[in-house]
Image (cartoon, rainbow, N blue to C red; front, side, top):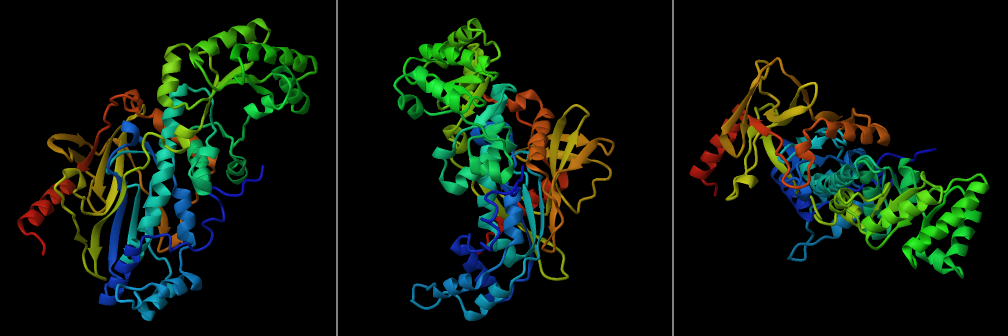
Length: 496
């Protein structure tokens, strides 16, 4: 099968989309240009403050879209012409012609590091680090947050749903309820990264090579004089794709009629693949449907369930011993139904003029969770051969050759020492250097497999849905001390 790309809607980001930003990014960029600081080197980190769905982990997703966006970063003549029409509150042009020419000539020259897609990540850990001219780092902020937040949310939701299904196939059926074209394609790709086996979205199948699956709708059943005739007509046309929707009238009677057509399929050398339950008491109906199928001679025929499923409902049906083999999940997956957004942020960590040492930056707040961490961050993940045991956020310039001490950022009395003999890996990897791509995105099935392997390396308590165990994530002690020092200094000497 020819796969047309690895990012969302190939071609959608294959043209410059640098206006995919908030206006204040451009007004700040204009300010930096106007005061002559546009080439100051800066470091920004993209991270989130709380795991979604009250869960214990998050699946990083969306890097492929970010890469495509950055590779095509630039301002078209039409972009410049549009910006020239913007006015301030005095009805005069908002931007000078010299600044617009500066944007027209701009070439992306930042370094970008990121966690690979499918990586399990946790609050306050940088998913992306951008280093380069402050104007460029600033302008791409909004797009990066847009391209990372939603797919990460959906991939995490999919991982939770697939976990509840305990290895049974989960089909993503959400196209019709997704938020627009890009939302639908983004969700289909992210759901596959999170563990879904297939999608009903044929365009996503073409673009990303995701397997496509489908059954039939109630309208097909209603278009024939009887349910039996509807099943038979479908079998005549598509004998190699027969999963019958059995709840248009009476569900269990529908299963019996499906068995009759199943015998016809068997006689003609075809498989009776399954029945789909889309309403009612799925636990009871699946058990009764299983009896009918088994007694009819079809113990291998699968029962597919749909009807506004999510991880909680699937887990409940499992505890009720529902006889369901496959799960079709739509609305609550592609819309991340119970949490509409990931609280991703993008914060400045360091700044310097050419040839000068780094000046570490901090933003303080009345809320401790919103106080930023200064520095240039990397994540060191310690592990045993069996599982990951802790993540340490550290500054890239800190010497950890003799081991390190991890401090809980919200309770400094909780500390843990890691010797230099322990196994670890650095999570952020180079993506761009001086604006040139140095990273090759893996094929989508490989990303999915990586995500599943990643999850298996964490304690089951971290993966549970209710009151999950908190995976240890802390700051390297010297970074914690620096943050404390700068926080105290900022509070003692408030800036005008």
